[in-house]
Image (cartoon, rainbow, N blue to C red; front, side, top):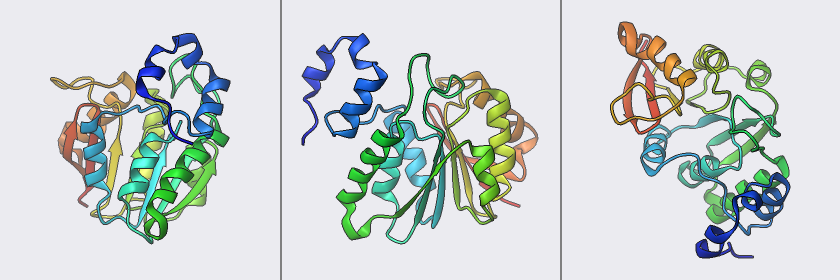
Length: 221
C-alpha cells in the first residue's frame, strides 16, 4: 500500500490530520509517513554522529521518523534501542498529539524491510527512559535524547544516559539550540546543553557539531 500523495494530505483539515486514532490507523497502514519532528540539518547531524556505532539508543520515538532514518544509516549488526512510553506525553509532544505503539512499530518495520539483510537489529523498550536505563550497562555508543523536553526530564536523561557512553561515544540532543543565533529548540533541552556543554568547556563532553535544533557532543574523558 503506497503513501497518499502530498497534495491530498495537504488538503486534509487539521482536525482530521491531527486526530490521534485516525493518524494511528493511517500511519500503521502506510497511508501517511511518520510526522517528521526534525529538519534535514538535524538529520544530518544525527546521521554523522552514529557513523560506525554498534549500539545506539533513541529516547523518544513518537511516530518513528528519526528511527526510520537511523534504520537507514546504521550498519548490519548494529543495535538500535528505541525507548518510548507512547500515549499522550505533554512534556514530550504538543497538546493533542499522542504516539501509537502499534502504528510506530509498523512504520519502523517498513523501514527495516527496505534494508533487507543489511538492516540493524531493533530492540523496543516500552516505558519511561528513567525506568529503562536500569536495564542497560555500558557501553552505549550513541544516545539520542529527544523524549521528555522539560528541563528536569532532559537533565535526568543527560545524567543517567551519558554515564553509559564511553570515551569517543556521543550524546545527541534535539530541540536544544533556542539560545543560539539562527537556532531553534525548547527551553528545557537548551538549558541542559548550556549547563553541561557550553559552560566550563563541557568536560567530560565537548560539542563536535550542531545545527538548527540539534547538538552532538563526544565524550573526551
